[in-house]
Amino acid sequence: MSSHIDIIDVDDLDKAITRIARKLQAEVRSIGEKIRSRLPVRRICGGFQPKTVHAVDSAFPSQPLQLVGLSLSIVAATLLRIDGQGVSHILRRRIITSYFSELEQDYVTMLARTEERKLILSLEALGDIVLIDGEIIPYRAPSNEWNSVLNLSRELLNRSMSERAPVVGVIKRSYSNELGQSLGISMNDKALATIILRRGEYVVLEPRFKLLKEYGCKLVFYKPSRGLNEAVKIELCGVQDDDEICKIIGFLSVNAGHTGLPWQIDMVDSLSKSAINIIDAIRNRLIAKLAVVDAAALSVGYPTNPQERRIKEGA
Image (cartoon, rainbow, N blue to C red):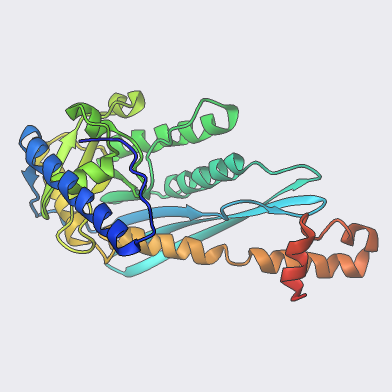
């Protein structure tokens, strides 16, 4: 596979697009033919029908709201439960503020991951399977803040082992190259697995991340039986038996929504994202409150960028 960058003249747009399409088609065919035989590709099986499924996710704005005297964001964490009684969920929201200093987005992300794990650990029993939107153990440099997330993740995995409840981390954006490195190819995991796998197939790898190895977790790439024709990457912990792994992948595959991801993940993602839409309402109500009680404080309650203020006020 050639990895060079191709710079194309767009004087003739149709010709440029045709060139891109042909190049992509040639690369996909070349990789698929050369690599597929080098992987232990397996067929997905069925048989796993959990009685209780929990799924957790969180959401937060892409960046904090920057006001003159305040940096503000919001985190929403949602725990979804599916059992014989139907579907229910618990929502937890937190407003994060930093007065007269900038709020770091990394701190907001850390808080979101913390809230997710606290919600799961608040359960009396994990149920038959736990689905997490994202990594089970987030990959971050050690710090006092992220160490708390690490400790909570360890606690979850310990409970998973003691309760025999598998934990699945569904990784939607995979920029890693673990699959590629095992094959000597420089390509991100999602693209490579999508090219190699056919619908109803999966491949299992040993993780390189030390903490995942410590808990006997596996990396799995599978292509669901429905939804988008793209591979899904997951971290799977609390399962050692190959037959059980196959059945869990089968459960995830048959429960794929239109995105190809398990519909439980799609639902908990949607619930979390809809819960942070109040960020503008929070700012507007803050300004209204300050306008009544303190004109001086009101002056630092507007957006740092005056142009954003004009846009919001319709000027």
